[in-house]
Image (cartoon, rainbow, N blue to C red; front, side):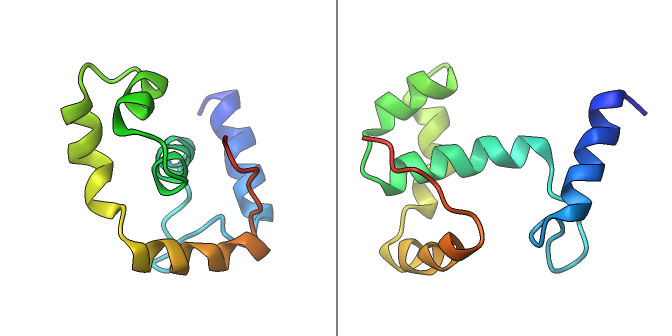
Length: 90
């Protein structure tokens, strides 16, 4: 096991959200998804998010994230602010 993986596992064990309901560990790559979805939810254009993520096209970004940009999920996502506050991207 790599040193990075050991440190990541140690960190996630201390976090209240380090494991999902089915006890699956939070993966480092999940942070990328959280970042992308936060950008889209805050109103950034899909093309801008595509460039930030270095996707080959906006279609790749749209296929992965656009289906989750729903108003009801934005409201539900606000509930995690008490656990994991994020600075708004302007």
